[in-house]
Image (tube, rainbow, N blue to C red; front, side):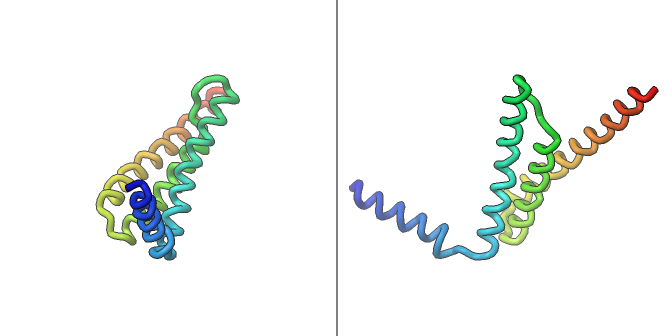
Length: 112
């Protein structure tokens, strides 16, 4: 039974990652790496600050990985990915806009 499970798992992983390897699989994997990098950036920044922080790089990695994942979803015709990443990308862009807007206000306040 355990041997059969191991063989079935091997066959599944081979089918998913090797037999079906193409441009879009590579693109999707890179998109997921970008998306994962945002957590590493946030974790490292928080450790350095000694408190939980969300650096600007977090939002850029979120947006980059989100847009790439959205393109992947569109190319693969995956409605769940399209809906999820479509909305998430709008949120990432809005957060970046708010950060830039508030940075402008902070610099004006400091110069007065």
